[in-house]
Figure 1 (cartoon, helix red, strand yellow):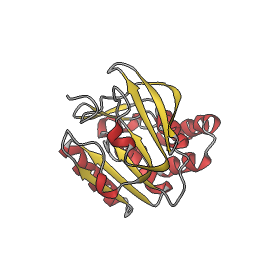
Figure 2 (cartoon, one colour; figure 1 turned 30 degrees about the vertical axis):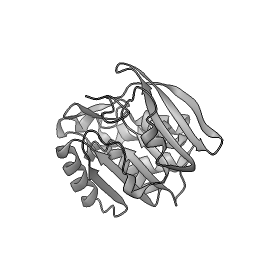
Figure 3 (cartoon, helix red, strand yellow; figure 1 turned 90 degrees about the vertical axis):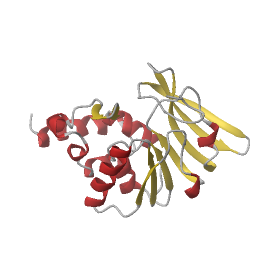
Figure 4 (cartoon, one colour; figure 1 turned 45 degrees about the horizontal axis):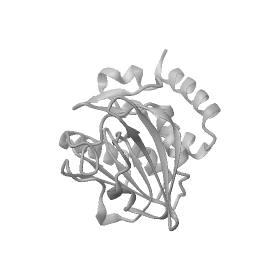
Length: 212
């Protein structure tokens, strides 16, 4: 199947399952084939994660869409992404919101993502290389929403604390082998938590997460 046909098939299914058409259309505008390894280009529109090197992955399109839909994003939002990877999710966010801050612990991935996003003309995305112990980017906090593209053993307070009141965070939480996708809404009465279903992500490394 050629890329054009594969993309059409993928988005036909996403349109059935994802009700937020802003998310679907933003994903449609971002060429996933430009964010995967060249050897995997032909598989870019298959609905599963792909390795991008350094033990990291580009997430399954359906899971990306589900996470973004759960964040109920507005065009004026400021969003933090934890785990830049190849820059794919950051690019989609760049289509949806006013300002994107994305952090990565792997120098090579941070550099590649920066180059790819710059080549595509995104001026509303800031990529930051951070130490392995650091979660988030406090300088631009608080955020309207946070998306975490790696699994944590529990919800890190250091991240939820970077949300505005009524801010939303979607994060995989669980063991290294299986997690539950959690949506947290920060309110003055306490954090509201709901489950979006099971998932599997690479481990989140840092304070309040896995140590290595």
